[in-house]
Each structure stands twice: as structure tokens, then as C-alpha cells.
Image (tube, rainbow, N blue to C red; front, side):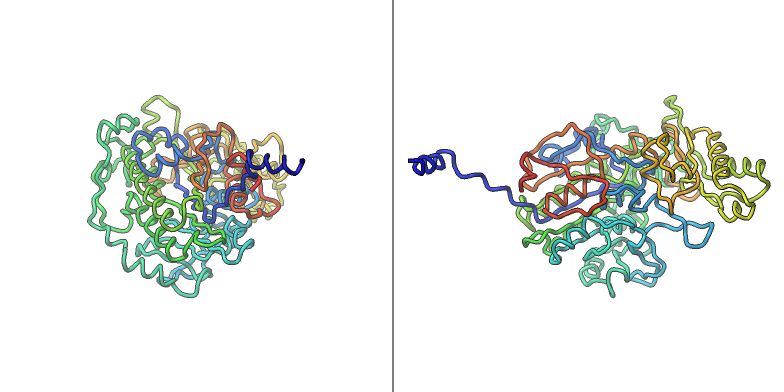
Length: 538
């Protein structure tokens, strides 16, 4: 009788539901400089990929970076490793060089060579933590990991230690390349792409707006001809308005065409590596850099920025379709995020009565040098601000001074500069001083960070116009406009939802690992977040 009841019960109630199959391909899309609010602000322009992320994805509304120095290198490394800069070591876009008193760009490696021509290459040696791609390959040696970007440091950080491919753009030739760290010769599929879709194919193209005047106004874009916008000096008007013509490689980075090439390369990689087509988990990680260059040059309120996102909406739609052709959609899990945000152009804020400003690194260096000269005698005390203030330890040692006292004096001097809210001496961060805001502790690495860490006032940032005249709008602070970035998961059989809860970018890699059934290593700062009810039962 009992057996009969059990049989009848199973007939009426059905057998226990099988856990949903895990995705076999993660496509990680990092849009350089995409603020969280852009998904809503530019929504009237969407009808393709970004619309699908908004409508069909698992979207977190409390998303943000938790570190203070919000820049390309730290942001990409944090997304890829699930660790704060304090742990993964990418504290800024530059770090101290081996020779005292100098800096070098992260990921660039003079001991390696690029494979398209004889030039200094790149490697992930600066990255002190393993990344999602490394965890995937440790779990299954058949897995494939591919990282692509215009920017070298973005591709290198996303790829981790041992990707199957890591490609970035040679800014001199416009070719996609990789370095001798990753391969002995330029991979055939990259060489073929360079031949069939060279950068020069875009020369002569004109970036005309695809968005109408009415729709520009609907999303709050400013007039086309706005003072201080453009790729060149503040007073230069030669590249301030549409249309923008592509005459050389550098032009592509300030137009959607640069990212069009990245998305085309991503589609080629799906085919070349047959991503998502077997039962081994794969990762395709791409970073779209044109968004950053356009945002720096024209600002977040410009027509160029709005038009870029209308273009990106279409481009991501094509990538979603390409992935669906490569593997059944439930097998593919997309995630959309960004490495940092951006503040509006300073001069536009000032015109609105907002206290804002650019602070030249030389101003900080001068203020600290002068103060230390008065206290301890004339020396070249500071060798740079990037953005931390780095003191010359050789001078401090030669003078026989207590480094803590010198750091305290330097911090006090830095705080005298208008636009600097606070300054923290190195010894307080080394000690984990609880009175130092946590974002700065998360950004601080004892080997690579400076001697004074700066906290900027709202809408104040470093001025790099002398060396990079296109940087009209900037980031690198802990304010919301820099820390808040989108985090949206799409596909993988997940039902659409809006999650009104905190989600830190350190949680992205562990969450993706869990979705794939891959173990994250001990010591990551983030944690896996369940994306759908019952997901933890997979």
C-alpha cells in the first residue's frame, strides 16, 4: 500500500526537477568608463544589445567598485581577480619602476617583444593574483580563455596568467598583436584578421551621429558645439563637433570604429576557439576602450557620448547574436560591467556654479617639496604623483630622518592644495589605521603605493592636459560618479530580475566561477552571489 502511494505521489507531483545545466561560456564585456546611470539615462536610444541587458538581464542596482583609485588598470584587475588592488597589486595605471625615481606603465614588459614588429611587449607579471581565466583552466585543461582590447593593460588584466590568447592594438600600426609571453609567433588567426580587416579599412570613414537632435535632447546631451570639448587643447575647436573623419589609427580610438574592430575580433575568436561548444567551461573577456577616449575628450554629457552608446547598443546586439550562433543561448552567460566612471568636464561644472577643478601633479609636488625644504632643508624630496605622492626614500635615508615624520609633513602640505580633501601618510595605511576610509586601504599595496595617498574633493581630479590634451573629463577618485558602474548578467538560463542590493565588482569573478562550477581560490576578497533562486543547488 505504501509503495502504491509513493508511485501515485510521484505521478501527480512529478519527479524532482533537474538542476539547470551550467553555462559553458562566459562572455565578460567591460565598457571602459561606463557609469551605472548610463543604462537608464541612454535607454531611449536602445533597441539592441543594451536593451536586452536592461530588459532580460539580472541587474544589480547597488553595484560599485570599492577601491579609491578608479582607473583602467585597477578596475580591470579587480573585475578579473575578485581582489582589491591591495591584493592584486595594480594600484594605478603606472607603478614604480625598478630604477629608483621612475614610473612605468602596468603590463608593459621590456623583457618581452610584440609579435607583429620589434617593440616592447607585455605580460601579466605585474598582476599579483590569479584571475578567473586561471581558475577555469585549473579546473579543466581543455578550457579556452581569450582576452581582447584596444588597451594593452585591459587585455592583459582580463586574461590573467595563462590565457590561450591575449590580443591588443599596436597603436603605431593599428594591428592587433600579442607578445612573446603568450606565443612564439603572431597567431595565424590574428595575422589573418589584420590582413582581412586592417585599421586602414576605416580610414576615410566619417562618424556622423545616428541619433536625432530630439533624441539627444531627450537624454540630456548638450549642444554639439560646446566649449572645452575635443581631443586637443582646451581652446582648440578643430575636433569639437560632428562629423569626425577617420584619417589615421589614432582617430579610431576616439570613435565607435575602434570598438567595432574589437567586437569583430571577438566574433572571430568565437569561431577560432570554438568557444562554448563542448562541456569544458570557456571565457571570452573583452574590453571596449573607445568609450573611455570619447568620454575623456567630449565628456559624459556630450552628443558624442550619447551617440557612442547608441552605436554600442547595436554592436552588442550583434555580439549577442554571434554568441548564440556559436553555442545555444542557455550555454552562454554574458556579464556587462565597467572599470570606472567619470566626472563631467570641469569647465562645464564651473559654468553651472559647481566648485570643481583640475589639480596639476606639479602643484602637489611643488607644495610638498616646498614644505619639506622649509622643515628639513633643500632637496628634491618628491619624484612624482601618480596619483599617490612618492617621496625619494634615498634622500630621507641620507638625511637620517624618520620616514614617518617626513610622510606626516608631506601629507599636511598636500592637504593645503585646494581640491584635496585629505591626505594619508604611508605609515597609517601600512598599520591599517581604522580612521583611514576603507576605500584607500583597499587601494593601498605596501610595495607599490606611494608615501602620501590623496583624497580628492568632489569634482576635483588630476590635470593631465600637458601630456594628454584629450583628458578634459577624468576619474580616479572614490566618488559615486567614478565608483558606480553597471553589473548585469544576461543569459545562462537566468530569469530577468532587478536586484536592489549591494554588489561589488570584486564579486563578479567568484560569481562567474560559481555559475560555471569552478572553484575560486582561497584569499579572494569577493564572494559568489546567487543569480537565481536555487542556483546554489546546481
